[in-house]
Length: 529
Image (cartoon, rainbow, N blue to C red; front, side, top):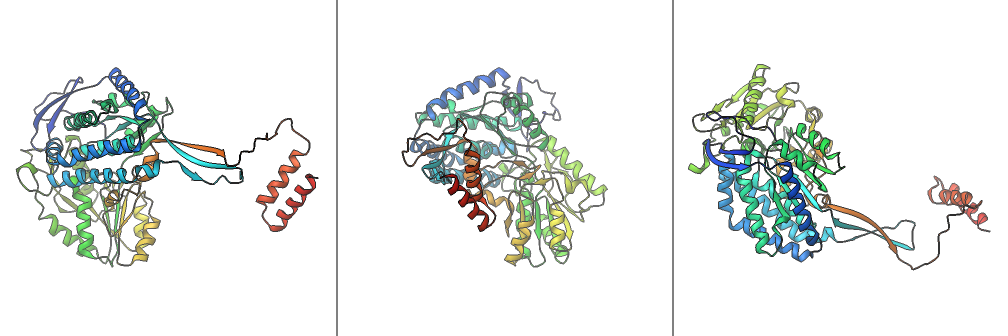
């Protein structure tokens, strides 16, 4: 999510030549990162283009070897990586380990095992061209651009690097300015791994800055763009990409529905909802922002959720074990606070939390539960991206589906019921790119054969799985000889018989009835005499 940086208490508005970096849990300065200009962006893309020319000819084994080295670095330096993530984002060490290290390692594992299978030429039917054979070939595009948000600084970087390298591309990343400090360190480490593996480190590069730097990358000479961020900034990316007609994969906002039927297991549903709402302090594109509970289960669900939320510990994770960390940006803290205040003004009921906390230490917002939220409320329609559980009462399955689909987003979703057939029926009716049954929707990311992406204003295109890998390829259609018949297919000059022959063939192959097809055959035989 690329947004203008705002002044923090006690600091002057920063110059645009450098990015000041802070720990949101302590407001401690981490230093600053130089802003890259448009010329810097073009130079990085040119270096990537040069490096990719050699890399595109690498073997699958060479590509797997590099991915193994990057995975080994991730595993062997996991504590160091988690420490950097915590300092730059304020998240807990457990969230850093599970949400960034584990997910990244699973993507490495999947790609090393399956990448070649999905990139080898694929035989397909040649249709009526019986003397030909057809295949799909997956060629590198060239240079991938990736613009990534601040909520998962390590995972968001590695997520596009893995398929880009496996497909034979180079990549230039523009991380969010809010996590420039850790991102710069991670990129330097990745480049070192490439150099140690005997590869050109310019295969992986990053440019740092604000919106202007991101806009320069979108308009640069790249071959595809992956954008993860807000809907408004997604629109700007599309406008910029149109100049070169550069393809874009977009993963934008979400307002995920989490449906709890009256027959659902209460403990299972409540604990999954807590994960969906409070993992990474709710700063999650697949956060379960709307908990739609059947009216027969509603009061019990609210009571149990309130009990558990009351036990959550919040603070600076590096001082000890806590459950909920800080809000990564002060801008987001303002958004969360205004959203909660607006909901209360519109009639929502405060069950837990609801305000900033630990204000003398850092940027924290209490784990919050709002009950009696109605679909027409602003908070039920707009992405909060914070530790806020919205409880919404629904009458039955059709009402739940109506409320779930009644937003402009469609990223992930969850359905909880003991009746498998019922749960699948509800899931099938949801307008979303992903649905998890009896699980928090975010767990779909751990099944890397599945795609990741949304519908409506949640974006288009897909990450993960074969579809995500192919989005970084030129998928080329090839027709080749099955039988070496070296005779011309004479189309010109046009003869008087051609129209009748082709018309007869169309009736024979595509006619509605057996009789029509028979007439087509008779016409063809007569024309052939």
